[in-house]
Image 1 (tube, one colour):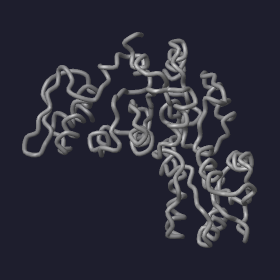
Image 2: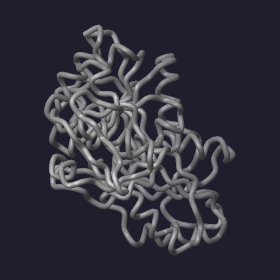
Image 3: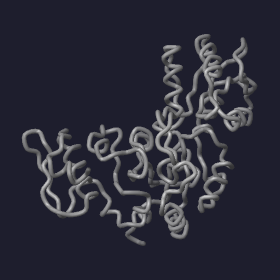
Image 4: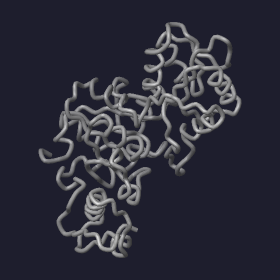
Length: 321
């Protein structure tokens, strides 16, 4: 375990949807890996862009999936969104809530007044994912935003992983309001660094590691916070997205799922890999050699990121298909 990836860091910050579970289905190996981190003495934090559940509900969900947790180990985009509101509004200010009861409760705990209807006293709108968000709720928010209310989006994830596949996320609903108002909201959750910074501070971590499945939120948030990251292929990210990733969305390590945390760090690092040689010929990435497909992907990413060439040769494309 001394050479395992998790041993090289003083905290592990886990994304949830697509990394630890898909809705009500745990991703194989997740409970054992979280347990291994705890047994090693590495603090863990669960950092989620999903604003629909309170921390105690997240704890109950994790516990039911075989991963006991404490409420202070959970950091949600709802908490981050309300933090932004509390920093900008006077105590008792009315906040129009588009989201779940859990989000409204967070607003109330911050000394603000959650409401569901627009009115002359509404000073802000906070928007988080809820399966019950309706056109009527968006209409109330539209009126408030057009009247000048501060607008905070807990996150802008376009999709939400589930056991049935990808579903519309909060970002899809935010996009509707952006179209209707021509206003861009403040974003509280990933890819902004606030959630990761808060989670790392909560354990006094100087060298944390982010584990996530989504390049444009998890990995981009880690890059923005200056934190190393492990990309897992158990959720949204695809090999094509990894190869084409812009600098702000490039991870440090790559694994099939979060069980990679117990593997040697150098085996997971994105870069040149034993057994594979990747070159550029006529604007195409050419792979030669033999070995594990994930090692090939790590090597392809390294060359693509260095050269800007992302088109795959036949062998590389076949190996990753």
